[in-house]
Image (cartoon, rainbow, N blue to C red; front, side, top):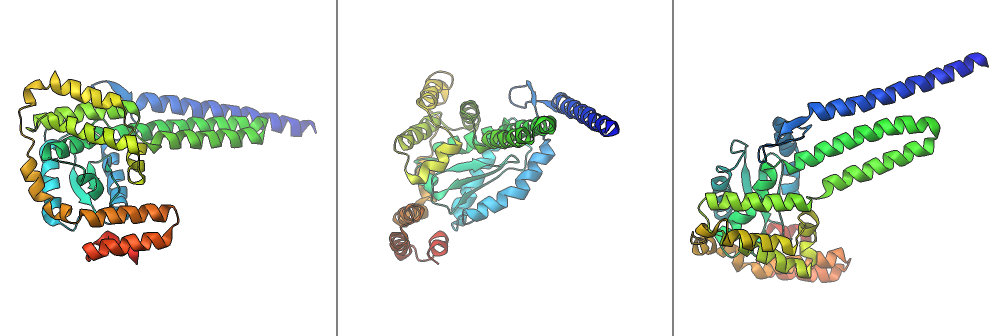
Length: 334
């Protein structure tokens, strides 16, 4: 009995040592993982290298693009988006990333970026824009997230959280197994929240960088004001098609007011730069021709979300009557 008690105590001592060791690893990982942010020039927690960002991008972005029914069937428009994005990317803090830009066939309203520079805009979002400067503002904003390493930063904080939780779970489990389960569950929730969306600070920084990049590329700062006006209007209604947009990119009156203030002060001299409305309209003409079909698809997807399948089918049929070869409508219908 005495020997068994000694063994148990030894196990506890070793486990506590393991806990301290794991905790020290997390601290040393924090110190070793500090890197200079390419935008701010300040040190930040970063456990993911640039090469890892690119690898994560290559592994995950194709799946998302596929989920969004692939790149636009309109090659001319897709090439235009790519050219516009590349023009802006060349004037950023990280111009050497393997940037790529495309429109995708999804009809919900959004734009998004992967950490290695793969960026997409949905048809629903493209139909809301009025000129090339607004497109430049949108792409500049997404490039801003990439340059400031927002996703990599969130992932690094999530990794550190998991290390601490594993360490705490190992120690707490010695006292009571329930504590271990609770600590693990809390850790999962915390990490998930970190990766769920951009923070308001992330959005402010991406807005600021987007404005900086677009005007450096020769666009009027009115483009960012126009984009913020669109987003402000959409945020007041929050239809089904914008839920993901505002879940991942929180909107506020402050963002709009900051854009207006910056355009009228810091970037006042750029207000006379071109919006390139006609060029944008020329390249999006075919998309706007099937606007009715895209709206029908949006209504059909909303009906599906409500499990109103007969209504959804009716909307998809309407879409196909207007655009018989539309890939998204065909997939949703059949």
